[in-house]
Each structure stands twice: as structure tokens, then as C-alpha cells.
Amino acid sequence: MTDQQVSDQQVVALALQDKEQFGVIMDRYEAPLRRYIARLGVRNVDDQLDVLQDVFVKVYRNLNGYDAQLKFSSWIYRIAHNEAISAYRKKSVRPEGHLVSDSEEMLAFISGSIDSAELQFDATVNAVEVNRALRKLDQKYYDVLVLRFFEHKEYDEISDILQIPTGSVGTLIHRGKKQLATVIHSDHIRI
Amino acid sequence: MNHTPPQSQSTASVKDRVFSEITENKVEPTAWYVFWCQNSAMWLVWLLTVTLGALATAVLIFTTSYRYYDIYEAMHDNFITFFVQALPLIWIGAFVVLMLVAARGLRATRRGYRLSPWLVGGSSVGASVLLGFVASSAGFGFVVDKTLGEYAPMYYSQAEREQVLWQNPAQGRLIGTMDTTAVQSYSYITFVDSQGVAWTMDTSELRPKDKELLASDQQVRVLGKEMIAKSDLFHACGVFPWMLDQKHKMKNLSAERQAYMDSLYQHADTPATRLQEFEQVAFGEASADNEPSMKVCAEIAAVRRISDKMR
Image (cartoon, rainbow over all chains, first blue to last red; front, side, top):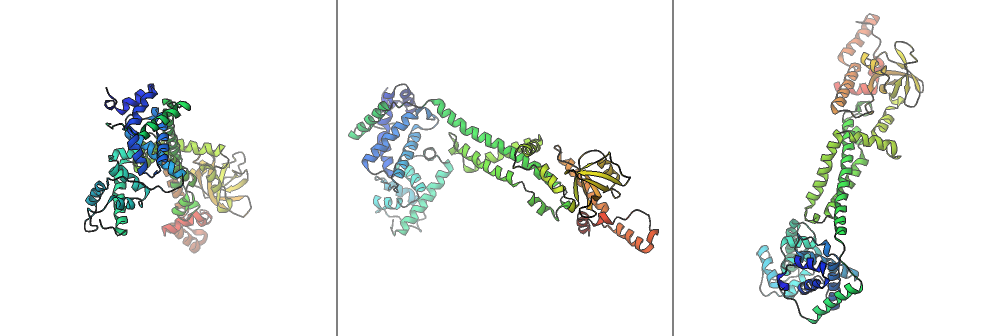
């Protein structure tokens, strides 16, 4: 059985017996978590590595607290989210999300939800413009939009990561989209 | 998960750094029971606050139902001002605070975040109110109120509040017991109030059942009039049992209030009494009967309020 065939839950159980097995978790999650941390506003590479290190140490320390009824990815994302927030709070700076591509998919979602008469969408809009508008959103909207449209998480996963009711996830996404449209509109960006 | 493990320099670096920190700082996974205890503590907080909320509800039900059937006419012009003044604000405040803590506790349990705010708040309030009704029917409201009144220095129980309200001779209210060892005459008795003052009480206008209650050696409430200020002469118009010595059922409270109203109606300035007054004026001593004048009780504030309502 290769590392890829073993489920996260099984790896957690193994890591509790043998800490070397924890390396499998790090192998699986380092890249996605690092990208997520960057999107949450930790832009400096050294800072990202520091946060990532703290995340994994915290995950290891709390392995027994993992609730096997949740997806392991949701649990580890939750820890990463909290650590990233703590990191930029320590520095007392407003986070600047660093989105990496994927904006076309985001636009597809937005265009499907906003009245076309209110806002015209244009395929020429690029990731930079969307990213600039996203940075102006309230943090709570930014967090759900990033998880939904850039990390491609389901509603119940977002609920587990941000520790909010599933119903609230839908509401925040809806309001986040509206706020994004308003920001884009007010910036006179024709999309 | 089918992630392809990244093979970059930074990947190896992070992994090495993590293992290095784990080894150097002897980091071990926290024992499972610590997490179990944390989660249990949150449930315990919820359970405890809901239980306390239930007791607060029970006291609220006790005080509110007692107030609802209380003799507000003896003290206030209308029920609303009386009820608002007598609202047990401390218990309402305690209930709100407890429910906020309960909601936070439930939200902080392992999967509490999945519950909607309505469910978190509603379940806490609902459980407290439901248990509160059960506790109230078992008499806990009365017991908690009485016990706190006895042992908490800053807390005034319903009984203590009621004593303060009724021990007010200048307003025509007394609370105490009849001194059966010092019978003065058929119409006059000695009454010792809750502050130990002995009153000469005129019982000529009392109904037979009032006199029976007065002679029963129980603590009673007397509505009437202090005949001369600072004197020890009190004219009794109605005698009512002290209802705060034990928990009473609502139907008892209701019956007692009805008896009180009947008593006041008897003294009220009804067409019949007005006719009697007219006869006395017209025919002097040759009126229909030679009952003593009803003037004293007909003039007290509580009876006047009843008379006003009847008009």
C-alpha cells in the first residue's frame, strides 16, 4: 500500500504510533496549505514557511483532538486559517490576499449570480482586477470566497474550517458576491 | 486525498524543520482525554447554566404568579403599574446572562459551531423554560426564593418584600398575629404586628370568616385604617391569610384573591349602601336596621378604588 492509498484518518492513527508517519501528512498538505496561507495574506516566503511550520507542529500536538467525523483536510485547513490570522495580527497589518490565477472560475460564479443588466461581465477582466476588488471585501466575505472559489471547498467543509453554521456559509457567499460586484462597480471596472 | 507530494527544496525544509522542532522540544500529541475534558467542560457549562436558568425561571414563575393574584388594589391604582414595579428584575437579568453563557458554552462544544444561532439560543432558552416549569410545579421557585432570602444578605425574597409592603399602618396595612391572651371585648382585640407593636384593633366591620381567620393564631394581613396617626388604634376592614409561608397552587391564590374582592365589594359604596345612607339621613335612627355605620371601611383607599370601578 502506497502513501497515496492510505486515507488521512489512517495516517493520523499511524502517526500517533510512529511520529515518522507524520511526514506523510506534511507531504500531502504542504503545498495546498502554503498556497492557502499566501491567499490569506501572508505574502513573505519566510513568513509562510514559519506559519506552515507552526501549523504542522500544532497539528501534531493536537492529533488526538482530531474528530474523525470531519474531513481531515477541513481540520488542518482550520488550523492553518487560525495560524495565518494570528500571524498577520501579530504584525498588526491588514492582510493582503495573494490570489494565484483561477480568477476566470471566480468570474463564472459571479456572472451567474448577478443580474446582467446591473453589471455587464467581460471576459477581458484579468486576475489582477478581481484580486484588487477582493482585497477590499470584508474579511468574512473574503474568507468564504477564497475557500469556495479558489480552494474549491464544499459548503460543509467551509463550515468546518471557519467554524460557522453551514447555512451561514451560503449567506456569506451570497453577500460576498454582492459586495464584490459593488466594489467592482464602484471602481468603474467593466467586467 | 490524492495530492502529489511536492518535491521542492522548501518542502524538505519545512518537513525537516517540523521534525527538528518536535524532537528538540519533545513535542508529543496531547492526550485524548484532555480534549475529551475540554469538550465535556463546555457541555457541563451549558448544563449548569441551563439548570440555573431553569431555577431562575421557576422563581420568575413563582413571583409572577404570586403577583398576578396579589391584592394590588391595596397598594396601587392599577395592575400594570403594580406589576411593573414588582417585576423581579434581578431574576430577569440573571436569566438573560445565564442564557448568553449557555449559548456560548454550546457553541464552544466540538461541533457546536454547526448549529445555527437560533438553534443554539433556542435550545438553551427552551430547555431552561421547560425545566423551569417542571421545577416551578415541584415548588423549587418558592424554595430558591426563600432560601436566598434567608442566606444571601443582599437578596430580598418575595416574602420579605411582601412584609415590607404590608407592614405600613399609615397606608392602612398591617401584618402580624392576634394576641389571643389579651382579649379586650367582642369588637376589640389586641393585634401584634411584625415589628412587635401591639395594636387595639376594631373588628366591628369584619365578616365572621375574617374573625375566624384572625383568631386562628396564624400570621395574617389586615387591611383597614389607622384611626389616629401614631396611635395604637386600628380599624380592620379585611383579613387575609399570609400566603408566603409555603408554596400555594394557583387556584388557591386565585380563590384568595376572589375572597378579597368579595370582602371589598361588601364595603364598597354600592347602590345598596347609598340607599342605606339615604335612609339614615331621611329617617335618622329609624333606618331599616340599626347596624353600625359602614363609613370607615367604605372610605379606605382600596375600597374607594373598587367603588370607582363599579361606577
